[in-house]
Amino acid sequence: MKKRHQQKLVIVSIVLLICLNMPIVLLFDSSKSVFGFPSSYIFIFSTWLLSIFISLYIMIRYNE
Figure 1 (cartoon, rainbow, N blue to C red):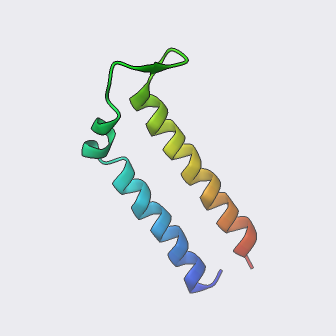
Figure 2 (cartoon, one colour; figure 1 turned 30 degrees about the vertical axis):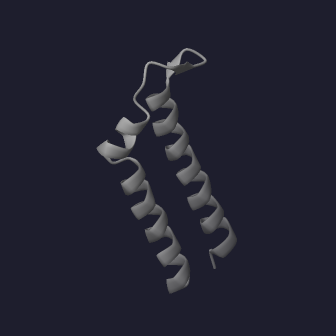
């Protein structure tokens, strides 16, 4: 894997760290629910799942 592709994975990790930081998560902390789940849970797990798919895409596409 080339250095620039490794940098893409580092950027994904930093963005994930920022998105899962407590002040950002508290923005989605409300009494509303989606399909019976609190909106903060939906935000946390959808962000986590999206980061997994982006990392998987980078690994599959650019792994040499």
